[in-house]
Amino acid sequence: MHVPLVVFGGGPGGYAAAFLAADLGMDVALVDRDERLGGTCLLRGCIPSKALLHVGRVLAEARELEDWGVHFPKPAVQLDALRARKEKVISTLTGGLAALARRRNVRIIQGEARFTGSGALEVKTAAGSEHLTYDHCILASGSRPTRIPAFEIGSARVMDSTGALKLEDVPASLLVVGGGYIGLEMGTIYAELGSQVSVVELTDALLPGADRDLVKPLQQRLEKIFTAIQMQTKVVKLQDVGAGVSAEFAGPEGSFTKEFSRVLVAVGRRPNSDGLGLENTDVVVNSQGFVEVDDRQRTADPRILAIGDVCGEPMLAHRASHQGKVAVEVLHGEPAVFAPRCIPAVVFTDPEIAWAGLTEHEAAVAGRQVEISRYPWAASGRAHALGRTDGLTKLLVDPETEQVLGVGIVGSGAGELIAEGALAIEMGCTARDLMETIHPHPTLGETLAFSAENFYGLATEIYRPRAETAAR
Ligand code: FAD
Ligand code: NAD
Image (cartoon, rainbow, N blue to C red; front, side, top):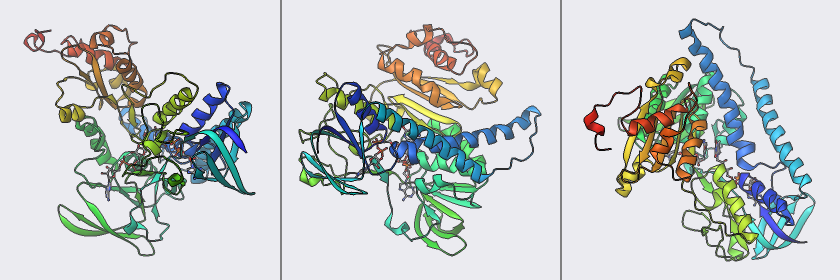
């Protein structure tokens, strides 16, 4: 069968690309080995983890209402019902995608795909093998969890993120290997459901990519809900001992062994670029396994474009779908490029951490002069009303042009608030633009305007001596 456009992978990159292609009048087929559309994000990533984090958050809020004199009995969690509700969220959304694909006449082919040449794919379907030729293919094969061979001990107690999201039980104790996005989000879920969670991180900090002042309030709260957080520590051996898994650690205090009911390994993800027959095409894969693309998502093979996790970091769903749309526009003959000023990142812990654009760490590495204006949420009326003053909003501003280069937020709902920061960066706003935009009161969103006011030494709730700001 010949199809003008094949999209290889039905995750947030692939389905966004296929749907836009159909909307623009292209004849498009989408191939995925999964029975359901949605990819990692919808089936075993963003959505199920956020559904469970929502439950964790409500449990924490109920507990914290004791400070306000409101006491709930200890919550009883029915795991079967919780799992069913999480599955319902997934099936509603994936069912919606299937319906949208049908309405748009996107042909869905379920099967394991492999390139047999620059313009040809073989798809192993339930009925046998299907051979497709195409004018163009958008590769959106995504990524999978990084495996550590020493941890492959054949024990069901050792899980990756997909296993952890199944929520088979609430283990008495859980060891989380890796203090990154997944380790902290999944660790939060299990801790709120009642597990004793210990995190072990190889480097000297949680969330190594995020600014330290944003991580600090999160770490302080995690230290209360987690049993242990060990930095600069390695798990050197795991062993299934029947009733649990014995883990051998090597850290600054030497070696020690501890037993856990379950272990979650969350040490990063690797691109799905191997085993796809890419050697039969002209696509170039770099030493880290990422498919190389230019700013129009084109690979070295003129027939093949690539988007999403398979073509680089940050491995985030919104980057994948944005790239998918760029790739389709390029094929449609439009002058589209993937050149965002920022790709916002959100860690959906409690508090959430979110940033967009330049970080302090990146500015320091690049030797770039920036002025940083911080607005502690202890000065926000809304934060006090919510009992969540543990937040911070900061702007990284170009001292010459006063343009906002970066925004960082830690606090309750930071993931929603960062969108304004992303818009400000994309639109080239100055701190004055943020300051002079009337924000509704009382909201946490005001902290963006207040941190801009603070840049000029003019924040109502913060006193800065005149000398500090006289130059501006
Ligand atoms: P994927 O979503 O990985 O989709 C790739 C698709 O290709 C899959 O459906 C796969 O079945 C298919 N495929 C691969 N190989 C073949 C083959 N040979 N034949 C046929 N089909 C194939 N990102 C966020 O932005 N926000 C979040 O909150 C967030 N939370 C996450 C939580 C977890 C636990 C995990 C694991 C990830 C999370 N991510 C999050 C990351 C996000 O899921 C990915 O960045 C996103 O799914 C990438 O989209 P993609 O389209 O590139 O690939
Ligand atoms: P990650 O890169 O965020 O974190 C992995 C952590 O493991 C790092 O801190 C790293 O230093 C540490 N590590 C590596 N090897 C180790 C070892 N042997 N022992 C102990 N620690 C070790 O990776 P992740 O948490 O697996 O998530 C993968 C990717 O999925 C993320 O980078 C992100 O792109 C995406 N994701 C995004 C979200 C979100 O947007 N909210 C949520 C989950 C996942």
